[in-house]
Each structure stands twice: as C-alpha cells, then as structure tokens.
Image (cartoon, rainbow, N blue to C red; front, side):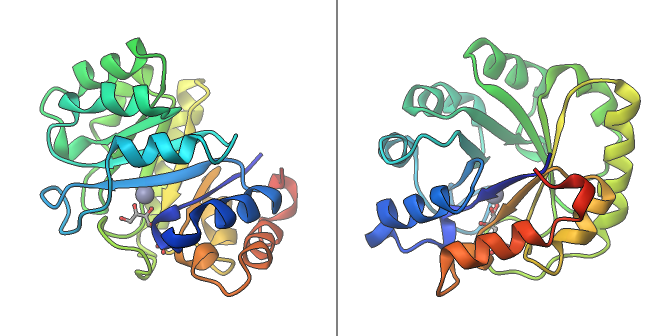
Length: 222
Ligand code: DX5
Ligand code: ZN
C-alpha cells in the first residue's frame, strides 16, 4: 500500500485550510510539513506554532520533516504541537540513537532522513529504532527541484535492507516526486511519496493528486 503525503511547502498559505481539505478529499494519506531553520538548510519555513494550527485543520496524520540543527532541543515542542511522525536528519544529529529514542518516548512515529550524498551504512545500526526511513531525492531546502535519478539505486538498496530486517518500516521519498517519477520510485520500493509542487503547485490540486495516485503501478495501489 503506497501512501501519498502532500507537502504544504508549495501550498498557498493564505488558503491553507481550503487547500488541505481539497488534498484530503482527493485521497491524501498523510500531510507532510517541512520545518527549515536557515542553518541546516538555506531556507526558513515554520516551527511548532504552524504544526499546531495545521493540526486543527485536518484529521490526516502529520508527517513532520525536521531540517534543523539540534533537533533534540525541539522534538518535544513538535510532538506537543501534534506531530504524528517526526523525522530527523542523520546529518544533524550527533547522537542519533538518543534522538530516535527520545522521539519514541514521546509517542510519535520515528523517522530518519538521509541527504542524497549520505551513505546508507549507518542504517544497519539504527534499523531497530525507526518506523520510517526517508531517502531524499533532492538536496533539502526548496520545493520544485529536479528529482536526482541516481537515488533510485539507493531506494532499492534501502528497500532490501528493510525487507531483510523483517521489520515494518516505511520507505519514504521526498523531492521531485510527480506522476512521471512515481512509477520509478515505487518500483524501487518506496511506499510513502512526498510531493509538494506537483500537488499544491498545480492549478487543480485534486486532479494533480489523483494523477499521481493513478501513476502508482497496479499491484502497489492503496
Ligand atoms: C524539500 C522538502 C520537500 C519539498 C518537496 O527540502 O523536504 O518536502 O516540499 O517539494 P517538491 O515535491 O516540489 O520537490
Ligand atoms: Zn520534506
């Protein structure tokens, strides 16, 4: 079952409630919220206050992607604000095992993200501590970037790692996901698709989301 997680990064924030509702009715499974601090990535978005506001706008699970330095200092705030899944970047956490365990203690689903240039070797050491692995398919920081096709090999590798572990771990992809890249990433093993500009940047949000759903290869459709 493949899940679609539209990223509000590309939404029109002046119409956010309406746009989220359209995505929800069109079949979004989760809502993806990109938190950027201007340090870990060269862009700034929003903090827990926004997560709290979005929580009141939807019943969809909130998938919070932290692109921030010192995530340990902020995970409680995001959990209190209503994050259902909290994903931290391996590159931003000095004591990743501790960070992941803190998220577990707070009762949220635990995610770990890898930038495109980050190798997968460390995953073996933390497979027991996560519910989700996010393979970035662009360099984080901005919506609307081009999918890095070299990442398909990495998705396939991580999918195998998860399979061999026998654990139920989501494999999420984020960056440049649209109706053209969806078949490739799903075939490689991704089962949570984050998509920002291809959904919220489209003139018809519902149609764009439906088209991405329809491009999921048949046996994988949810
Ligand atoms: C990028 C963010 C993404 C972004 C994806 O740093 O993590 O979630 O919203 O945007 P698109 O789908 O436009 O590549
Ligand atoms: Zn993201």
